[in-house]
Amino acid sequence: MSATAHGTARVADFDGLQIEYDDRVLQPRPWTAEQSRWAAELIRSAPPGPVLELCSGVGHIGLLAVSLAPRSLVCVDADAGACAYLRRNAAHAGIRVDVREGLMDEVLDADERFAVVIADPPWVTSDDVGRYPEDPLLAIDGGPDGLDLVRACLEVIDDHLVEGGHALLQTGPDQPDAVTALVAAYDALTVREVRLQERGALVRIDRAVGAGRTD
Image (cartoon, rainbow, N blue to C red; front, side, top):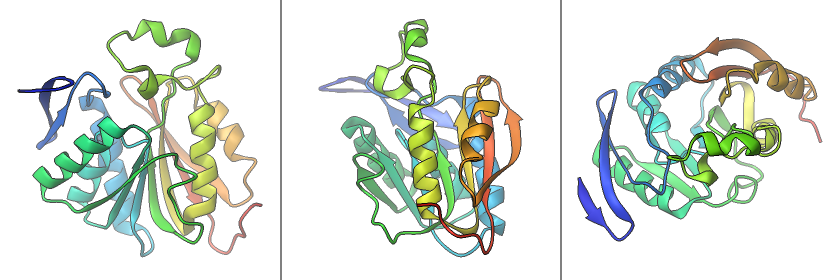
């Protein structure tokens, strides 16, 4: 551990990756490595193209995914502190990452396309964030129904996922049905599989080949 102007920097072992973080950002949870492993499976069979991670935090999930199945990685997060740690963690892992600091619908070019999208949005309802006092509000508050950032991620997925590509979205354990209903509004996107995890759920979303984009 090392002292910084923002407190004590800690190091977590995330399936072999040494991930730095502090109290300003969400602590890496070991159970979320399953998202990395599943994303790596999808990357291996996906069409050509880079990987995009949305709401990436300090980067552990995306970094582990591309360490298992190497591809170019773009990470997006609105928090400056998280992005700073992401850059450090990528450097420590020897993985080159294009880090975009800002809102996800503003830091991506309209013509950018990705073969796999990993999304880790906040999904706790605003009324329930007090149950997790150890977690930064920005990292967990998903709005009144917990799905505000999920909706934003789906917009980006629809705009930027290639035909035949895959997205892997982390949600709350009781949210997959609601997410499936949201995905149904997009003609080209389909929920293919849901896996329940220790404290959440993973929703795989595929983009059909030959399907047009929604407006």
